[in-house]
Amino acid sequence: MQKSSKSLIKLIIFSIFFIFSNQIAYSSDSVIKSLEKKMNEIFPSVKFDKIKKTEIKNIYEIHYGGEIVYITSDGNYIFESGNIQKVEKENNSYVFTNLTEISAAEGRKNLLDNIPDEKMFSYGSSKEDYINVVTDIDCPYCRKFHNDIPIYIKNGIKVRYLVFTIKTSSKRKIISAWCSNDKNEAFTKLKNEENIPSKTCDNPIEKHQELISSIGVGSTPSIYLPNGRLIQGYMSPDEVIQKIRN
Image 1 (spheres, one colour):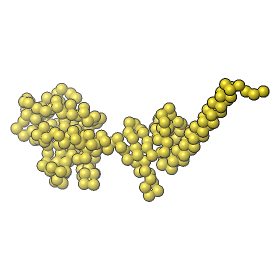
Image 2 (cartoon, one colour; image 1 turned 180 degrees about the vertical axis):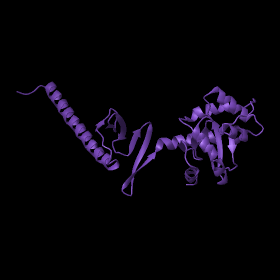
Image 3 (cartoon, one colour; image 1 turned 120 degrees about the vertical axis):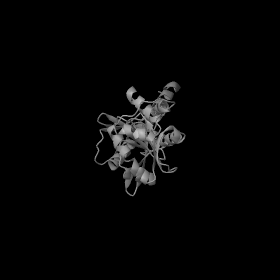
Image 4 (cartoon, helix red, strand yellow; image 1 turned 90 degrees about the vertical axis):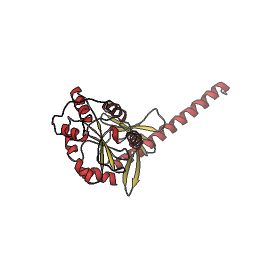
């Protein structure tokens, strides 16, 4: 008995759907196997739990315990902690380029370069080799960094400070330093936990807080190289200078 045309159409649609679904499943399985192999090459000592397809085209999840990172189906880009990492193979090893940080550094550079020395606590005179540093007078590692300033100046590196204030008392001290006849000397005294005369005047300290918020500082000291790249926390002058010169 011949099938009706409607039944035949349904059969054809079902067959196409079944074949297409199997092709998708096979394709997905193939990609997962390829990604598993690549992850084992990139991170041979780190074991992942599973890799699975997401609802987004060409994006897969990699599960490490309770942590999840995302990877493109070709394995060339990884998304982790809000960053996009480009993955490239060079000389039998894998190199990561943080594309998010490169873009963020460019934005920070543009913002910081628009602040003149006259609006910051500035030590040294170099126009090309300089660092912008977010500091805090109550931070021990910030004091340690400040003690290194003669080394930076000797090596032709200018240090420009934005000062982060949490406590009202600290803010008053910083304003007093800014309003002193020699603001850099007064600021150094604060870093050394010495007292200075209380003073007031027009000052950029509140503007410092706005700028610090704009560049998203998470800790102090935060050191920004001339290209806008961020060094979080204290680092020795030799290491910082090497990063500037390279």
